[in-house]
Image (cartoon, rainbow, N blue to C red; front, side, top):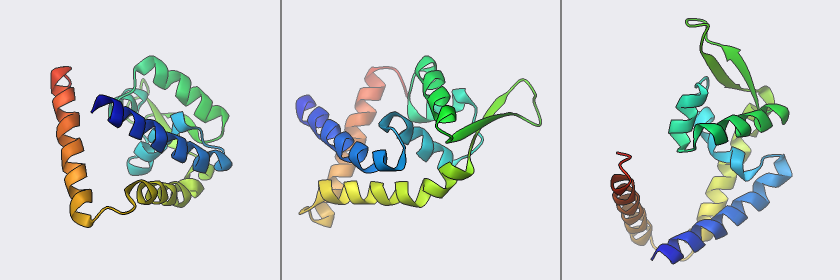
Length: 139
């Protein structure tokens, strides 16, 4: 099962990478963009927790995203010690495209499955993820 899940994740990652690269977005930036689309203005620590990436890795990713014109950093107006991550106009303009890519990749991966099997797959994956997180002490 572990091999199959890993293989499915890698193949979906390759599909995703091929679709987003043409828009100047790297695979390692995708989850952060989605998290910021859902809640712009997070701190790096909040973003790390939201996408389950180590803080050191997040720091490097944010540097690349800033270099690529996807984010900008600003101080929190209520706490000047905090730095908030905000999407740029360029990143905001990519949101419909990125959401469309998600739908396209998911549709390709789930092609031929009934709605019932899709729901069952999602429930099963949620349980597997929850079990793994619990075993790692992350819940």
